[in-house]
Image (cartoon, rainbow over all chains, first blue to last red; front, side, top):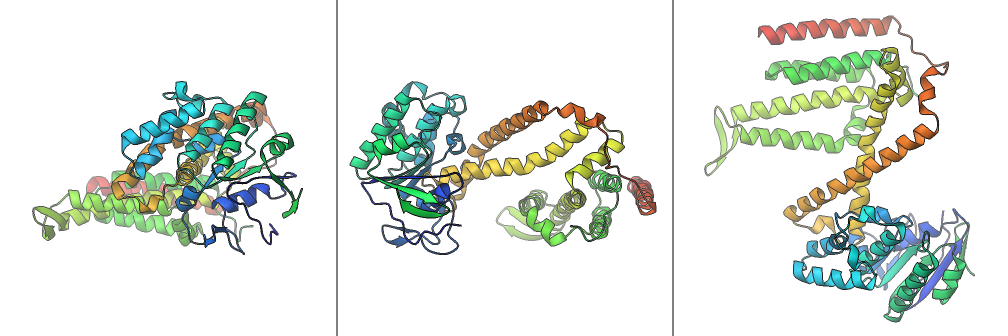
Length: 200
Length: 246
């Protein structure tokens, strides 16, 4: 059970949330992204109460990167992973392909555009999952253990991406145990202890 | 904790086999109705909760209904009751065909629901005591678990899509169907990968040693179970005779 009287993530800020296993970090992140709904209390996005919002509406505002990125990949090719949701929401196919190409370039995945997401390495899957989330241009991002399985070079690239997104105005919550990465990217840190959020 | 001990699982196998076999063989609506009545009687006798079963297999029941409706529309015959221009929507023959299809699927679903009265271990033991090789018995039990696994994989993919800002309910029917078709292949692939991981994990824990282990748990049939087997056998002969003669 979470006991969080108030917790807010501001646009243009990266916050880090650490804590022991089972302390409630992921639960809090999932509440913020609409994957879980509170039994009591409210989740507000820019002052708007999200009770009754379908998950897709959350998805347009908050991106959630799972600990296991393969859980959020479903398309037959890397390129389609980025274009399929866009075409469903009415974007013309050519425009979606151009947007996807630019994103794949940005994440160093352009050479893998025709590969199956299932054949990618863990790090590549993680970058693809993040790229896919960014296609919706969400205002907020919740990254759950984003550095698991990444080597130092990839961690550095992820850190640069996070900093760039924050500069562009995104609010990002990084959940995890990687204190070094958190120090690098976050301007504010919290600890979660038995369901309560405390300043680190 | 269960209120009362259900019959031996082997009796459930016999009844489910009898019901499924004749659900497929019977063509006449009255034969189907009689077998459906038998299936309902079995469900009541086995104390399977019908409302719980309907909730659990809601999607399958809905699918059965849709298939029956389609059959009804696409097999027009006899008196025409409702039409939209040249398209016959409801006819006496079509309705009969629809009811036959629905009855058949309902028998299969009710027959399958008898197994929900047992734990997986009891079903496996039942199959082993029917002299089915242990590997096959276990595979059947794992196969049964594969269905919810597939559902879970599909839900994961739909969640992933929603996290990309797609509100599935807002999509037009054509696009929604496209989504479901699109997500089926990765959901099946995901289930197969999970099944492979499960198989590997079982092998690593010495899976094949299991049938040679001694066990306190064996199934014994009492008079009620023998009676149920005898009734299912007699009914199978009678139903077979009725279907062949009439």
